[in-house]
Image (cartoon, rainbow, N blue to C red; front, side):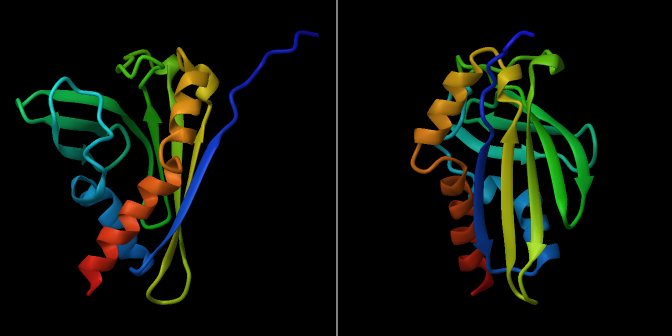
Length: 162
């Protein structure tokens, strides 16, 4: 029996001050409004983040120079409760077009009363990535990992709902 090392999943969560259907829509349709601009891999400053709706939609950034840099694809699109995308960014922070070397990010949206939504994220299968442990370690150490990104979502959503 061979013992193969795996890279553990990463998790994050945040409470968003929006009803579940609005939280899902804000996460997906307005990702460019809340995604932290410093989290990009393209050659120029990022001016937008785009998540195309539906299975096979693209997830990518647009740079100030007009370039587009892929991040992954939509695997599951089930509004307003679940979204799964591939993460095809390797340990060198470059896009890898081989879907066999992609990790997955699942985002779940659960209502917590009529005006709040718990957003939970799991980033799994990092062992598929070239340099997956480096990706794990960088995200885990970057200002709280995925929770810090989701907290940005919560802050911008709260400002929107006022």
